[in-house]
Image (tube, rainbow, N blue to C red; front, side, top):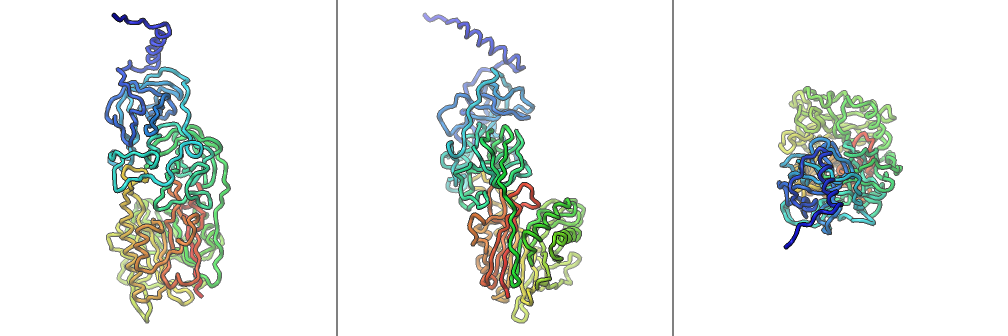
Length: 610
């Protein structure tokens, strides 16, 4: 016959403490514990096996607190590296817990998507708390897992190694050792640390900085960033976000002194490390580049994105852009410009004219020591060209006439009050000519709906005809995030850009059909890398050559996306131009810096035409 054993004195004290502390904390009485621990809640996958289920008494130590919840981590982890030991507890209001509290949590397990239930984001596994009981204060915090050398190394090439399109949350495949998305999912909600991390992108408007460990990262740029390749999205990047502690402004190459620790969260399509204390920054000393002066016999052609410039922008921004053009770029002869907004900027009042924006920019360039540029563009139809709402951003040509370049104005009398028609090629005297100059390519083509229409213009360089096309193709807005649930990410906009590339390619072919040796430049923000399907569509069958491809990978970039350095801005040359001596320079003066007047770096090509 067995007999119930009376609790010891220490056991009775523990029971009393367990009963008293929740009452002191104002927590409701405990439900029957379900026996689940955090690794059961997280599971070995992107979706919790307990999603939708109620759990009770899940133990953990509070590692960080925010306005609507807290993170906790199991002090007694299992030995399965595929299951995270950390989780976010959603409390709706400021929780009555502190870091290092030992707690037990009741609630319902869920997968939260900040962008909405139907978005392509992964879900953040969390417990929607109904009760939190504080068992003790001052519990030891779990040691952080160090990322990089001396710790756990994330996969350095692959975000998802599966074949074919799949929903990672439903596929059943999970490989933290080989796939970046799975690696970070296996650490979601846990304390992590980086030692002597280096910034591979500037601090963004959202207070985020992409960093990599001091060693062990992929192909680095020569200025300290990390180069993105088609098959390598660089999963070793870690995005630091200032949700818990401020992150100072950082440029590419700046370092974080010592160890930076925080909790790993997911949001805005990225896994993000939230430091629990503001890191100390050691400046890397990066300086903006400048290119060389063009020689007397060289035509200098550049592409510059002005990032929604309008008259309401502060004077310092006009001055900074002007210094970049007149100083760092050495005042190119021809600049294909993107994102010039109308005179009222984002105010949606029907304005489409840009004369005030352009006049202020040209005056600023002259004040910075540059030449007196001239401008040609065509006002868009109100609200028809995309970009910032109300801004009516357009492309255009800035050009100087003091070195031999001249614009051939050929207005279309049937164009109406907008002042511009559709670009078409005619043959005159054995040469390709534009029927209208400037003229829009595909102004009425649906592929350009809601997007800046390419602008074609006819020039002469010391008497030699030249046709230029300024572009700003559709952005990646609406594409799946790199760390989204669907892999590989669905690039809806890339298909559209490919069709836009085909439209521009048809125009270039029509020029070369009229005159095989025509001098043609196609330039702008194409929102596509040099080896992407849109660029292949543009160069295929046209003979266009992209000089940027000859630059080493470590220098071949114009834009940074969450720390990935890639080339989106291009200047392409027809065979007659590409056959002449020329050189290209991606001038790194904007994209790598937290204080920037625009987020793109310009590209300049100098062609010896005399």
